[in-house]
Amino acid sequence: MLTVYGIALAFLVGAILYSSMVGAADLDPAGTAAALLDKLPLVRLHSDLTPLQQAVLFDIRLPRVLLGALVGGLLALAGAGYQGVFRNPLVDSGLLGSSAGAGLGATVAIVYLGGSGSGAVPAAAFAGALAGVAVAYVTGSIAAVGGARGGSSVGGSAVGLGTATLLLAGVAVGMFLTAVQTLVLQRSAQDLQQVYSWLLGSLAGAGWRQDLEILPYAAVSMLITLVHGRHLDVLAVGDEEARALGMNAGRVRLLVVAACSLAAASAVAVGGLIGFVGIVVPHAVRRIAGTSYRRVLPLSALFGAGFLVLADTAARTVLAPAELPIGVVTALVGTPAFIWILRSTRPVQA
Amino acid sequence: MNTAAPAPARAAALEVRDLDVELGGAKVLRGFSCRVAAGGWLALIGPNGAGKSTLLRAIAGLLPYRGRVEAGGTDTARLPRRELARLLAYVPQSPVIPPDMTVLEYVLLGRTPLLGYLAVPGRADRDAADRSVERLDLARFADRPMGTLSGGERQRAVLARALAQQPRLLLLDEPTSALDIGHQQQVLDLVDGLRRTEGLTVLSSLHDLTCAGQYADELVLLDRGATAASGPARDVLTEERIARTYHARVAVTEDATGRPVVTPVRRRPGE
Image 1: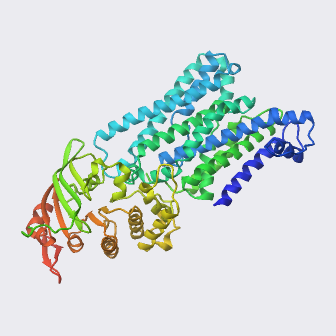
Image 2: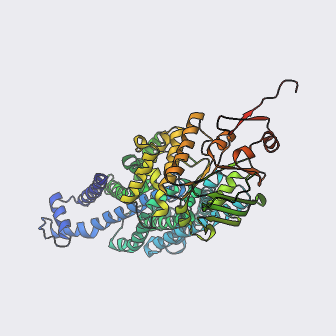
Image 3: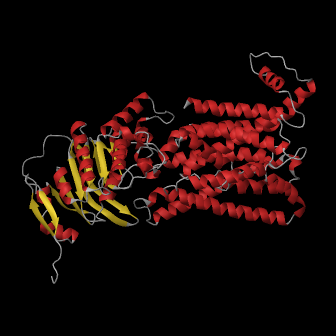
């Protein structure tokens, strides 16, 4: 099992190195590696890069590459965590109202608060994502309690009642928020272009400031999610049996959903809506390393980080000097992968 | 009908007094009481909907109830969920089987109540899981996904998970309902062996009346949420009583050991 972590780590480091080298100005691989290693504590290496190349590497490329790694790791980890909580491999962190909430937040910021230049868009998207999940969660919990009181919690049906209701509430809240977003957009057609390009996701314009801004949220949400791998494995036998095994299923679900939503919201704030990473990466990981969330969670974070770094490299190089929206790249790769997964996985027991 | 002699000196591993359970506004159990000696086996019988599963879930702490449940002398309502799970293992009638989880991973879930919140299973937990996999003769399935097991193998895996919990009490809801007669006997023999070697106390519901009489020390017949009869099998399993509670036509005979055998009798044409 250690080898799988080794491969994942090598994949991520390789992706970071490769992405740091290619672009408008291609950098020499040995020089890039030396310059990067030189920054590590206790390592002193001489690099052949010119001062200009060093500036390109450290001021433009590296912050963007690291932001891609952070966003990819957060999205894949959040997707995996959600899939564990809802015991459904097709769930994504966007499903519980967070994508729609982020979309509405960003749209409101662009239309009413002076657009992307003001720095209000990431904050609004972040707040919108968390608010969307909170509304969906509260609505779903109230509905689930009402349903249980109706007397339908006999035997097996109690197993999926809470999660199914929660997901339905998430979908409904998402539709509602998207409708509000459309309404806002309708009244201000001149902002369409900007909102549209935000929705497709992009890491263009990334700098160290964005890295540092999401780092605390990323660290906290990743830590909380990663320590719950074993608990998600227990949830696989359903709420009632998890309770019979002494676990507080409701508390675990709330904690993991909160942490994963924070992860997704931080990613969305700086990257826009980037789809598919949260579904495709955990699935690929399950095929390599089995279904235990103790492995799926950390490996998803590592592979997701590497995957998004490569996707962003493609986004900024394929049509250079123009940039492709990164959401387009992940969807172009993600859709065929997703269909392949749908074909090759067993139906999940409800 | 119990003998007049005082109850044996063995301590009660499980004592239930005046249990009432309501589900969705309906009283599903009324005033249920029972006592199971340490190492004993009490079987719950009764028609569908009599309250057997509800009773087991209530004792497992999964349903709110009024009344008192004591395990090993401790009021279980006072125990945190995790400590209760160290005392008793509950196996539902249709356990949720994660199809892609390996048998060993599944059995390891039984260690959950013995692990701290942030702990991961260690050497001792893996050893315990290995032991219960061996005990239930699953060693060659250890790395197989649960979804590929047959009904009998699956039921053994579920029992192995319960055993890995190292409980004092086993609550089994219809442990043989999905099995053929050979696998029924295999599972019931296993449970019987566990209570003899590990000193486990067993409370189970069983739909097969003859089996219930063969394996359990005592039977409780539930009818519409209340105890209709209790005691040794030959006192509980009478033709007249089965006819009344199950609306069934049966003949009750005795096997070579004097235990009752319940045989269904078909309706004759023209009757």
